Amino acid sequence: MLFAAFDPLRHAFADATPAELSWVLNAYTVVYATMLIPAGGLADTHGRKRVFLIGVALFLAASAACGLAASVGWLIAARVLQAVGAALLTPASLSIVLAAFPQSRRAVVVSLWGAVGGLAAAVGPSAGSVVIDHFGWPWAFYINLPLGGLALWRGASMLQESPTSGVQRRVDGVGMALLMLSVGAVTLAIVESSAPAWTRMELLVLAATGGVAAGAFVAWARHARAPLVDLALFHHRTYRYVNLATLVFGTAFSMMFLTFFFFMMNVWHLSLPQAGLAVTPGPLLVMPTAILTGRLATRLGHRRFLVGGSLLYACSSLWFLLVPGTEPQYLTHWLPGLMMSGIAVGLVLPSLSAAAVNRLPVAHYAVGSAVNQATRQIGSVLGVALTVALLGHAALQRADFNALYLVHGTLALLTGLLCLPVDTRPRAAQP
Image 1 (cartoon, rainbow, N blue to C red):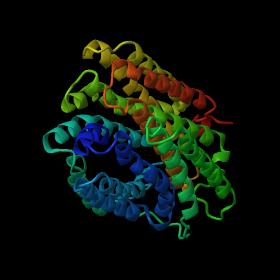
Image 2 (cartoon, rainbow, N blue to C red):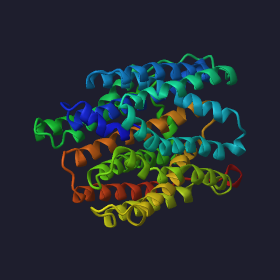
Image 3 (cartoon, rainbow, N blue to C red):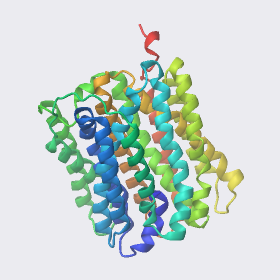
Image 4 (cartoon, rainbow, N blue to C red):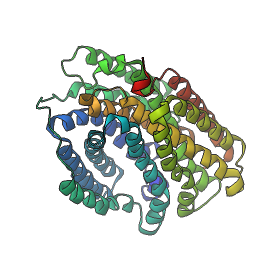
């Protein structure tokens, strides 16, 4: 919904620059990515049901605060609080689902869990665009209240509490600060890359600060007693490559999704509800594709779907680069590329989640999946930053999108290359 709300927010807060408004998306995502990892440990330690319900309640309170925001600063602060709630509920939800099924069905289960996100991505643009157009941007947040209230009520009555490990895990504040500084500094350097208020030297210093913070984060994780990220998880070759692929694909995914709205509203001059409806068919294909992929991956493994889906995603960016022009021709010039991208996301996104936890011990489900989800969110931050840097100026022309499509296609191909070493064959088939 926030992708659909980006343009209305530009009109509501006319004094804010596109780079400043990008932090409505990115402040949430940076905090969400960083908090996901300790939240996975909290779920294992204090009970998955309890952490899930606390996360939902916090998310709802922050959603109300977002809708009431009278300034960009207030909105960004409320989004940070919303991110904490989302981070608490996400790994707990996957852990609850994983614990309810045997190993033989987990590929299907994780694909279904991921496919729900695909269904949300399909509903969000169309329903969100209509709601925002009729009632204003605050309803992108208020609409969470009845849905979250239902989740609280049914979750409290239906979910069974998981046994806790009893081991108190320390929250690595130093690691969290270093990760936020790293991602935040690099993101700021990207979104402000064309801003006249920043000199080239200042931007280089920002980017270098992010790089140094990233190196310090790794060094800290190697020697801290209870680091934010246990680097031992990355000793497994498949887990290492899956997370690299997740970072790259997360960047490409958020770039393409936000670009859809920029193109529809600035080049084809569609209204917000029309733009939301126009991008819906692609995400609608994600869920059935993910379900079918999950069933086949139980026998065949995920690698062929990851590589094939990445190649198809690159083909979709090539289509958008070469075919759509300035005149709206939706059925022939837009829909085929949109369907390719929807099927590709259905092949890749849930498979990345499933491949990441495929070989992890039960005790590491929450933390391992949280690291993978955090990696995807960091990619999303970079994707939004790149999109705003390339398309954030006021008057967009068709040619302005070409560089973005080329970057997107390159990232999609790189995802496929990173998935080639991934080994996700069913356990019984391995030597």
